[in-house]
Length: 138
Image (tube, rainbow, N blue to C red):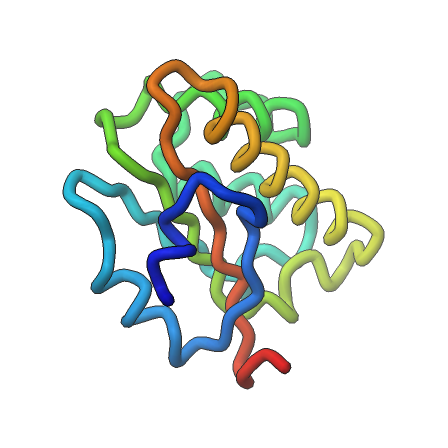
């Protein structure tokens, strides 16, 4: 069941409870890359961009805006090659809590990135995101 989080199929952003994360990571395919982002450090747009840059070692030219985030996530050539990518965003409830309008933009961005990697990227690779909550999803 956890393999769906490493798959090419929609959806690519998944709401999961924190107790599921170790099982998902344990089922990582060979040469997979997982990035853990601290949602408590992502309460504003600016803080979100800083945390993505830190956790994913974005290149120095990262522009710290939504378009630049999309560009970096769609072009992972600055990172070692991987068979699959997984973002784990802890404390999803805290993410963009100081700018609620943008939370849906982030989730849409992550879905779009997953779609492009699944359908358009050279060599197609799964790119999924776990949006982690404290309690089990209904």
